[in-house]
Image 1 (cartoon, rainbow, N blue to C red):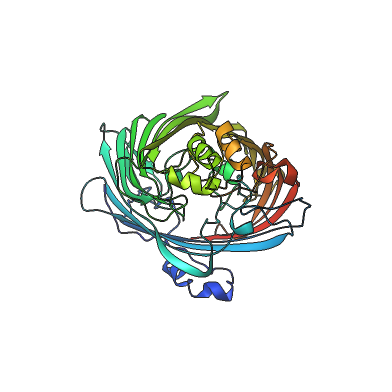
Image 2 (cartoon, rainbow, N blue to C red):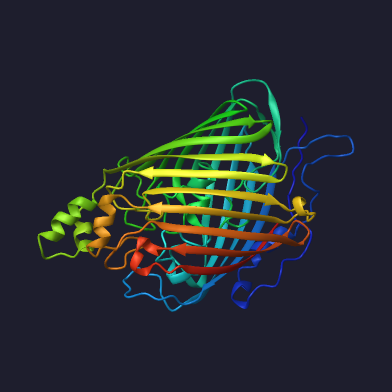
Length: 466
C-alpha cells in the first residue's frame, strides 16, 4: 500500500466574522491550503492513506426568547424578562500518523466566546449544544483535544476508512482493537448518533443530542481525560469501555487523576438491518466514583439547622461517592432520506449532578430528513421531543432551596421538563457553509410548574467547515 502526505484543506472563503472573533480567525487560516476532494480516488482507482490531516470549523449560535410570566426566581432560574445571547466556537482539527503501525495523534486547539441563555442556567435540557457552562465575554483559546489513538489488528482483513474530522483516511483492520488515551470529549466515542449527535449540524438541545441522565465526565468546557478501549470483533459489533476523569468540584475545571475519581462506561453497539434498512442499537451502563455530594445526607444536615442546603451539600462531597445508571440509543433509517432516533437514560439520582446537567431520567425521540425528499439536495431538517425528570432525592433537595450546576429556583412545585425542537438547515456555499433556523418549546423549565412558561426559544446557526 502506497502512502502520501495529504493535507485535507478547503478551497474557499469563510463568512464574515464579527470583529470580536477576528483575532481567532488565524485558526481558520490553517484551512487555506488546497487539497484534492475527499475519497482520495485517482484515475487509476488507487486510494492513498493520509499521513497528515487538518480541518477546521466555525460555528456561531444566536438564540433568544421573549419574556414569560413567573411568580418568583432563584439563583439558577432562567431570567423571565427575555434575552438574546450568542456563542462562537472556532476549532482546528489536526491529525498525524505516527511512525509505527496503527499509531495516530490528534490535536484540537479551540477558541470560544459567548454565553448560553441565562448564562447556561435555568433549563436542564439546555437549548444550545455549543454553549459552555463557563461563558466568556472575551474569547479564550484552549486545548480542546489532545489524544493518541492506537489500532491493533485482530485479523488480516482490512477496509477503507475515509478521512474526516479527527480521522485520517487509510486502510484499517476490519476486526480490531482501538485504544484512545488523552484529552477528548466523552461523546466523541460513546452514544454517538447518525441523527442526533452533532450539535453543529443537527439538534441543539442537550437532552436530544446526548443521554441526559448520564452525568457525562467533563470539565467546565465539556472535555475529559482518560482512556477508551473499543473492541470490534465483527464489522457489525463494537464493545466500548471508558475510564474517564471527573472534575474535583461541580462543573469544575480540574480533573484529578485518582482511582476514586472515575466515570466508568460500558457500551455495546450493534449495527443491523431492519426490513433492509440500516440501523444501530447501543445499550450502555455507567458507574461513577467521585466527589459528588449526597442529596439525602445534605437534607439531614440542613434540617439540623445552621447550614443552607447548598452549604450542607458541600460537607458531603468526598472522593469515592457513587452514582450509577444505564440507557439506550436506537438509530434507524425508515425510508430513503428519513431516519429516526430514540434515546432513553436513567440514573440512581442519589448523588448530585457533577459534570453534565441535572437530569436523572430522560427520554427523547426524533425524525431527521434530507432535502432530497423535497428536491433540495444538501438541505436537512429535524423534529424531536424530550421529557426529563428527577429522582425523589433530587426533587426534595431543590424543593428545600438547594441549587445545582444548572437549575434551582429556591423552591419547587415539581413538573416534568418537556421540550420540543425543530430545525431546518441549508447550504449557502458548497459543502462548506451552512445556515440553520431553530425553534424550541420548553414547558416547566427547571422542573418547576410555578415557572411553567412555556418558553419559546428562537435561534439561528451559522456553521463553516473545511
